Image (cartoon, rainbow, N blue to C red; front, side):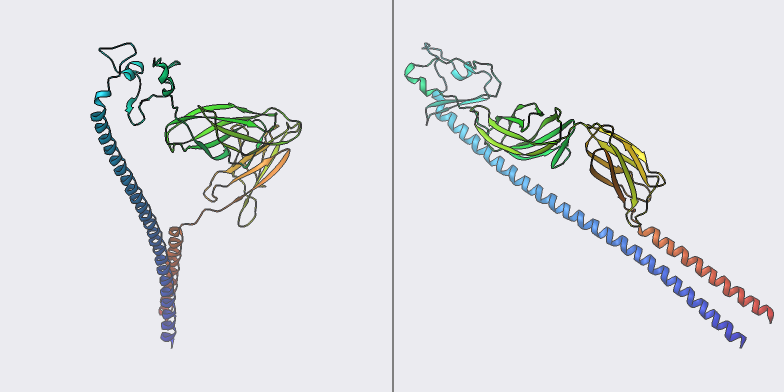
Amino acid sequence: MLEKVVSRKVVIALSVIVVVLVSSLIGVIMHFTSIIQSKDDKISNLCTQITTLNANISELENKIAQQNKEIIRLEKIENLTNQIFAPLEVVQQAGTEEGGVNLASSLFPNAQSWSLDTANRRVVINLLWNAYTIPMGVIYVPTELADTWVYYPPKANVKITSVAWETGESIRQISETAVALVNVVQKASVTSSFRITASASVPTAMVSPAEQTFTLEPNATMTVRFNVQNLGVQADTDGYITFVIYETWTGTETDRNSNLRFRLLAASTTTTILDVLCVDKETGLAVSGIIVYVSYGSGESKNGITGANGMATFDLGNYRGQATISSLPTDVYKQSTLSVTVSGRSSATLYLEKQGKGGGEDWWTYALIGIVIVMAVVLVVVSKKRSKMRRR
């Protein structure tokens, strides 16, 4: 009878051992399944990137092939033109009957190129902008042909694609200065210059520089920067910036935009105090020991550490406007960032999200627990079995 009881307990112990081992094995399998799935996702993303890269390479190769064809075509046209117009390449200067020289080369030695257009009976000279001071050249022609000499400056057609504040705000809160960004694109088919002006809708805001001139190649883009300064207001004042683009030579307006808005903030007579509370996103409990940074104004920043109540307080002086709050990541919590408008006594709450737990930690923990339990059960069974055998 005693042997049956012992055998039953041994069976129970072995069953417990098997259950624990199976649980550990399941944990291990789940861990490696998670790893394999993660690797598969990375490989899939990599394949997608490779496919996109191959498509871009193919597109670039097609463009290069088209450009090479165009170069060959232009070279053939140039060679043919040289053969046809060879007798006309020596143009006599006024008053010279023998030993004539090339008029284009003599008057414009810095010209990029020149050609004879016999269809329209004209000499076309390509000059770089600012290659010459005024006058660029003096040409003497018969009076009856004076109207046939015409200068065709390259005309720009620049458009505004977007306007924004450097901080990304839709309505910029300006207590001192701010930077406006204007993105433009050249729609003309030739390299040409344009002029862009910027003006504020209220006299208490000054935009500088008020005007800028640039040269852009076809389809090229660029970002133009303007500084906007608050000259001082008695009360908060709303306004907007108007940007206008002109073609340099004719002064023709090609585009304008008045969508960039701002708010001039009146000087504060009170000190701005910002209280930042850090709380756990899951539990809602205050978190201490978190390093918090506050960025504000023209590149100013301050930092502090949350106390036992999860609070950090910052003295921002007389500043009013946009401020960015961010926490440094820790072993427990991820970084958190928040943008707020501050004035006088202000407060903000940073919700901290915990770092993700890796699968490696979980399965090792389960495995160790399982091993400990198995060893404990074995020791108990063996110990009881020995004690009963001794009693015999």
